[in-house]
Image (tube, rainbow, N blue to C red; front, top):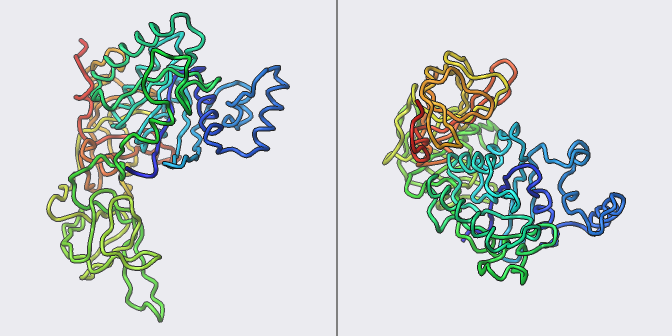
Length: 431
């Protein structure tokens, strides 16, 4: 089991995400006493009888005044069993882009629904996005369960509908858990509540502490080495006159001295001489570790290249189909000229055909759309000026993803997934 879990929250507006995150911080004693005092005073000023724990996380003035979350905020907390990094994402439809950002590296996502509303359009949209991103584990927190009559029946009906939805989207039953909670009162958050006798599963924190996760968070369990070169280290000092190292973070697989590797996209082969770190040399380095590789031969390598295992190195490609979540305010149309960032390489790109647009409510495809609007998900064809060494996203989340960037302003306009990941969640085609 990994001792670190990366998770994110998602859900519609007013489902209680900020209160839930505040409750997690409060129940794990991850906030200071003066913060609690400040929240208590602010809550009294608002005429509340109990502390409004959402104030622990809604730090922006605009968020506090509107009572919403409008940005991704990262929170850190821990229990004796595990540490957590949590991305708290907004619920408004126009901020779906933030959900994509926050969930892109998550090993588990907590998706909230209001027990009084059940599974709604935004719930289905978020579930579809999370499925496309390949989030391995999912928790449905049925919040405000204390505000409904016949809570057992309501919870059972919501769970059944959600189980059917996630099954259609490709999750296995063992990877999804529904929990009835009250973030306001703490029911089933840190410990199981006597107020929900119809539920016999773990509390939310118990589940977060025990859920098994992929430690390197790539989704790649059998891929060989993938090492995007971040920086070429050439000190040229008296102490290190001939030092040439290639620094970066291992995106998949492992590496050890003596391993035969290939540099992509050039195709040059050599072997690893040693692995340097600030703490000394390593005998082996696994995915997720930041290291500097020293190679046996002096070869032409620069930032943006990928050092890969010879056994299963991807073939560099300059044209491919991909699934993209469009995050730009202006629509994406065929012929758009953008920058594409894959790993540490940035190159010019042209969008060819818009193959289909995904309807996340009907789980169906609309062929040949005229454009992709803000928050639309679709399949497109792309051509790049310089080949990229990409894996299919379903094989590896890191080397199978890319960003589309505005060449004028530098803003991120789209999040792309190499390959046709839509086939896993589509059930039909619209006329």
